[in-house]
Length: 558
Image (cartoon, rainbow, N blue to C red; front, side):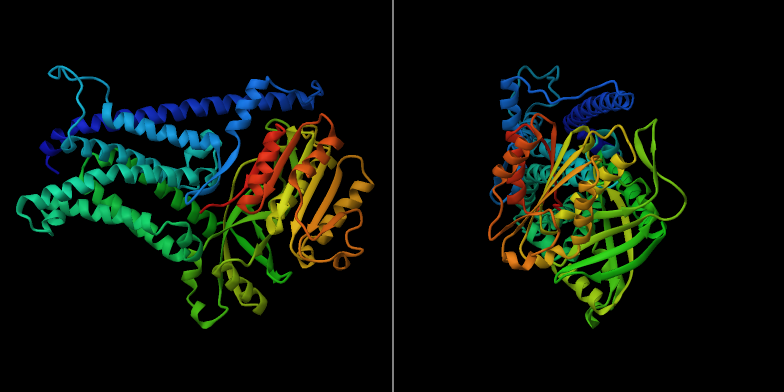
């Protein structure tokens, strides 16, 4: 790459690296605040082990409560997302504004020979925007990784970063478009030959290849393709990414500054994922249908020794339900995110870190439940029915460490198979209370579960019944269970799970359910977990927010 070409474009690079440093500075400030909060929480839990605190729920200033409630309200944006809090809408809007400011004004200093600021002409503005877009796409790479330093420093986990991965990608692509259109027009205007607009010289050729790579990624990343044609989405994402990165570096050498560190993290993430899924031993103990459309998978995987309730793993299965599925390599392109519902391991509580630690050297056993919804999971269900699942791989665990233990009450609202994360949380709570772990305040658990038909009870009936029986004979944890069956009659559930509050023919009124819990628990701190459809979770989250209850929802938007 000629040195003169790099030097002649270095002024545009100033806008890019000033924006790059600004964004990373804000991120590091956020990380410092987060780590301070974790340190304060650790000290609070440490004092709790020494019985020095008596924690109660205290209301805040009404103005602060109103503002917080507004910011935490979840809304739907047509054609974009069904579940996003107002604070994230404002954050994305601010991100747009910051990008516009940097495109017009960075690096915010006039050169000595420039008397006053003028709006850059399109021949300059298109390259300024392209450089800012290049920085944004370096962020896109990092935000799409399962294992990276960002999650460790900030506490933001993979599933929480994926929506930002898409938003930042959209902004970056919008910033590329003026550069693409103007340069196509300029090249065509030289000799009025259409193909010269893309192939005028080496710089234009590499720019054209990079453009196709970026649009390849964008066009095949819509939700319909991701959910219904995942292999197409996966292949085009990898191929488009490699095309765009290689061609961009050849197109403009200063791309190296921003893309290479991100590509290094991407390669490290791929190596770590490969190690977890191919080198850490896994044993498939059983896989079998347990209801009309649910498969139960029981397995051992030593990677779950650091598992926390509410976390999930990625799983890939090699099977052959029909002749078209005989090629085993295709199955390892479909990695399904699955919440671990049950786990079996001997643990002790580390008094220095206040975290559970697995004992012994044996693999950790776990159970997941998979509902047949898309083409891939339906094919897996058929293979499990026929006994044709050969091998499988696991990558994980991923996800947050949920802080339910700092609240006196846990309320779980689940829709269908969305009960699985609640199962892990409730079991963890009961185990830790039984073990006498003093950092766990939670002594009351409410589970509200909505199912269509009584058949959906079968995989979970024994576990729920055992918890209710244990609650009757122990004062450590009080367990309350409410089940709403929307399409069956009361006769289908007669005599099942004694102690359950049943309702038939309708869904619950979430506000009334929460009012009932609040009446029982009085002024206790309440933590809410929900998993289900976007509409269901939006209702639960907004009702919890209205009552100033901390809430977490589980959703995968891959």
